[in-house]
Image (cartoon, rainbow, N blue to C red; front, side, top):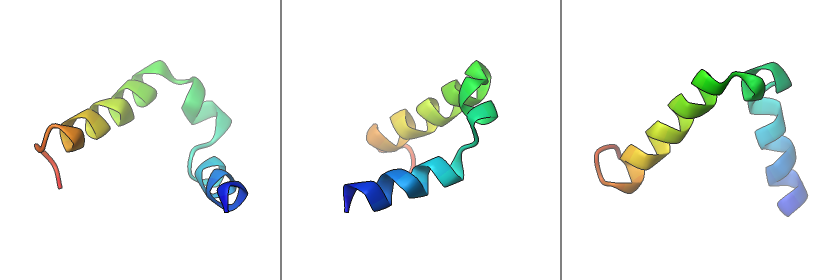
Length: 40
């Protein structure tokens, strides 16, 4: 099951996307807002 999840995430975000610090920070900020109850 872990492998299936890992492969799905790899398909969502290309290596180029993951190397772009601004994009990674943007995704991280979205998750922080979700964790803090700002997003559902």
